[in-house]
Length: 173
Image (cartoon, rainbow, N blue to C red; front, top):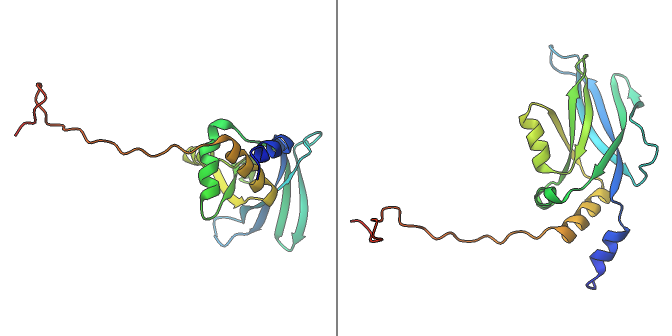
């Protein structure tokens, strides 16, 4: 590939993706909970105009239901490059869907991210975080962004300092 190869591709790639989240409701196995919820996937498109937040029932089979939550935007940020890099290099790269329970206890997605660190910060704050597979077009887009923007820091060996030196610099015995 030529020198301008990835730069040229970066100019052609979108800066923002419009996303929808697929949430699955199934009967719970616990006697204290009626339904179990989980995010099962994310869909992406390049079009961001006119996509408003909405919830649609897209599939129903008995008590199993799939809902499509639309109206999310995904934009990559330079300060999260290292997190994207580590996510893409992991054995199983993931997208993270963050949700909050509404007044009925139903988890409602409010954010979708590719940042491992951002998802972890929300999880430490007691938010619900679902990890789902990354759609191929978003994986390629994030990979191109990381290739163009991120240079891993070379690890440096630290030199051990003598912690038991005298004031004149000689080692105490």
